[in-house]
Amino acid sequence: MIQNAEDNTYTRAKSHGAVPYIKFTVYPNEIVIDSNEDGFTTENVQAICKIGKSTKRREGVQQFIGEKGIGFKSVFMVASKVHIQSGSFSFSFEDLAGELDAPTDIDVENPSSGRQAALSMGLVTPVWEPADTVLPDPLTRMKLTLRDKLSYSKLLSHFDTLPDTFLLFLNKLGAITITRRDRETAESTTFSRTLDESSRQATLSKAQRIGSEVLRPSLKHYHITRRTLTNLSPDERRNGNSAEVVLAFPFEDDEPIIVDQETYAYLPMGNFGFSVSRS
Image (tube, rainbow, N blue to C red; front, side, top):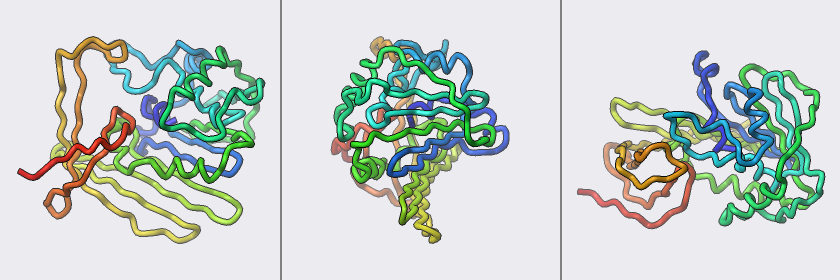
């Protein structure tokens, strides 16, 4: 869902001075996902119903993450039903086959498992479903009804693995919020980013709320270096033969912080032990 949110457009939100965001509200039986993106068009609805079709590839624009609509359909690894409300659209998809060979746990180390589950669906048919809530504009909301056999605690643990450096390497999203709600507690974590291109410095903020208590935000500072590589080998996922490489160096009080860093390809790939020393 973060992949799709990064590939969306936020013209209307930005015109009102709003920061592009995605918010996950995780309940024991459902996940509600909100984003202030511009909203669905008829073409978007048609694309999301078919594997092998996407509205993301445009002439002269690099397709960063999305892969032919399969990314969205992988939500059926964890959901038996998905309801989408955006603008004048309100429709749902349901796994009428039952289990869709869905795993009891989410295999984050093997994303192809979700891809296979999505492919087994073939074409998915939307069903019109009247909305029970009037949403502010712009806002797109997706409700994922979770599968009965899914472990709520394990699901939450995957949200905990989201690196706080995630936003440094996204171009559009400026904030990601994860809220956990059950009968007893409500906890919320918001990651946000500010970027000063002139000084090439970025600040990441992590703000937490536990019940009615608001914790003091933690701040991390980074120096950003960008370089565009050219004359790369042809790749069908990349328009042209160039790509941008971004490095983020953490510092505090003008002194570098030497720690291992995550490696990203627009999504976190893992920590490979690359070290950077002072010179």
